[in-house]
Image (cartoon, rainbow, N blue to C red; front, side, top):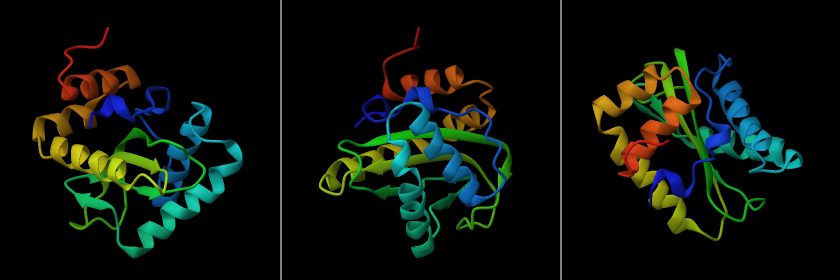
Amino acid sequence: MKFSDFMAVDAIRSNVSASSKEGVIREMAAALVDAGKIAAGDLESIVRAIMKREDLGSTGIGRGVAVPHTKHPSVDRLVGTVAVSHEGIGFDSLDGEPVQLFFLLVSPPDRPGDHLRALENISRQLRDESFCGELKAAQTPVDIQRLLVEADGHGVAS
């Protein structure tokens, strides 16, 4: 599975204004609403579901990266977005460090395979230190989109 299979490019945020875990999750979910990928009426329910998942254990995987995610009946296909916090946000990460790079996923409950493949793709790409560094340094959503396209192996986005 590639980033292009599930990333909502219109929802990419290159500099979030949030300063808390719930704030960044809410900001990213609202970006998916603005991009038309999730219904506005489902925003609160999706944020609650992601926060409930966070209560089980932080999705802050370390090295400044978090992958908040949930399964939710309101979506009929996997959807995701990326956000960057240049300052970093406390996220109860495994290494205790602030998070700068966020990948948020929402998938239908009946498609666990897609959810797992997306998580595998993200974790595989995030092992690449230069990829992470370039994402954290990205100044615009277009920069982030270009990096995701390159990671997919398609070359540079036009």
